[in-house]
Image (tube, rainbow, N blue to C red):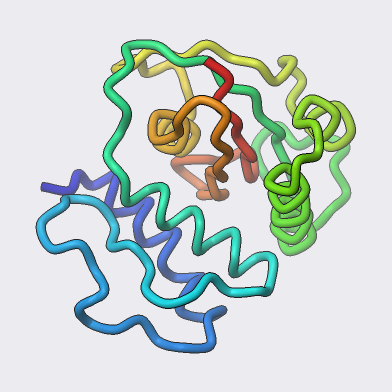
Amino acid sequence: MPTPKMSRLALLVLLPLFSCTAEPASPDAGGGGGGGAAAPAGPRPEEPVAAMNYDTQKLLARPRVSDAAITVEHVLVAFQGAKRADGVKRTRAEAEKLTAEIYAQALGGKKFTTLRHKYSSDPGGGVYPMKAGSSGMVAGFDEMGFRLQVDEIGVAPYHDADSPFGWHVIKRIK
């Protein structure tokens, strides 16, 4: 059964897809009874933001990994108005577009650490160990991180409650 947090994340991911994809999702495209968001139907969109949102929806629809602890590296893409985004000049729309570009570069084989050093707004270094069931991490970051396999990349989308600092491009490294 979906939790309220999962429902908010599913909505966050699904809403941009309906406005960005050329074809509507078929009513039977979902994963009956899986408890998470329905996996998207049809081909992956070509537009970078829509493609990122499509991939994010697919990853969030997967079950969490059973590992007790993982380590992730991430690029935080903050914007004016996000929490702790002092000095950041980009708009929310610019941040989302930049996130999609960083994500595409990471998927294309660009060294993730290079992307982190060039783009991240994270003052904490960008590499974090995470423990299952711990409440010390941003909810959206945790939801994506624990769905990734080692060396897999995903995006925790901005959400004012679950990911209030901006978008997180996340690579699981352990």
